[in-house]
Length: 256
Image (tube, rainbow, N blue to C red; front, side):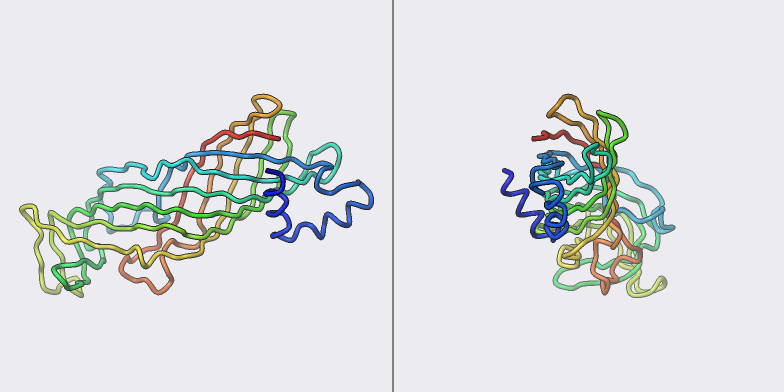
């Protein structure tokens, strides 16, 4: 297990700092080092910042993709009192949600038959999001008390499995413009959409968390993650507002 942690450290280039310290403190990878393995659930959603005027009501929200995330990380303390340190790691995590919303003049693109139609929709929109990422976080760590630590920093993520799809129903779409041709979806009719291929491959963001040590080896932690860049590619225009991954990770871990 330690070999995996060491490879992560070397990849991120931290070993250069370690060689300077090694002369004074001995082996960089054993002195004032802390290795952890964590697992967590992610609760949250891909959401706009604030409620856009197009969204009139959120009728339903359910978190999905409740697959345990896994993380391995290593912390290098800067001194023997282990007050301040830097942490690097790697983890996999699922981010997902299922929503139902009532919207008005909501710009989108739907599939009707073999044709894609853009326009302004008024009615009910159902959305399913199921994405999996590989995340590499880098954080500063501060020991508040013998059993408490807080940490915060940045992360980079790679999307490895993706879905952003749904359908519209119980309403109508004005094609191309707010006063364009009216296309009605009633009596069980609907039009699907799938924006999975428009999702951004790389994501970066910020995280803030805390750890409580139940014992010498076991920890509990909450961690808030905010995706700074939106989930869609910059050229994607079929939704008029940006969506960001905002999730709370809740989990436990083991310190070696």
